[in-house]
Image (cartoon, rainbow over all chains, first blue to last red; front, side, top):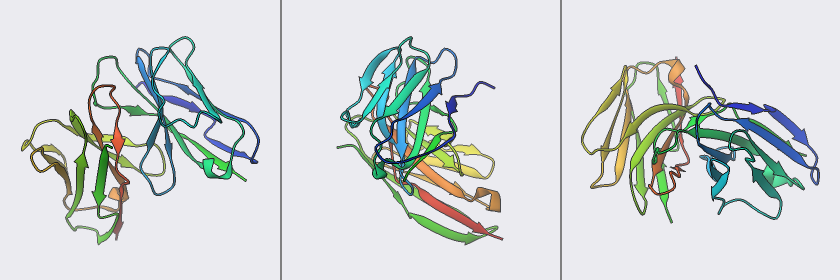
Length: 115
Length: 111
């Protein structure tokens, strides 16, 4: 069964360092999402791609976060510099083109701890 | 601002009990409501609801949507310890396919 892949699964870093997360969506899924989930809360959308284009990045802290999906397939989310408040689970999800508010398929997530 | 509110935030019951989890929403444009189960990893899909009054059922889990009153419930009957998880409700307001999640209900089933 096709799955969304993410790496690394866990990352511990010190504040002010740079971190990067990678996501490979299910093959053929045009839409890719990055969510941040703080402990005890629901996921919050950071950025959404349709193919290689950003559709929504209104909640992305652009002074320190960046995201790209250069060839419209896999994607990288970067934080530089990391802050203590960035400690969270970072989830990647994908959905096929043309799905409106429908099921999104989640990867296993990257748990980030900033010390 | 789109908002999804779940209640209760936490629930502890004994194995065999029946539980009802609630989700209310306020969104500009509504297309679908989704329920996910999250154990110590990524959310896994349970149900998607788009029409009022039509119950979706999978084993001991069922869910229904009321688009007039803007809420949904998730029922779990004959609960088992494996049902212990955080249950997330999400709403797709349409347009750019964005899902807005509630804060989740942490369900604990004690043997």
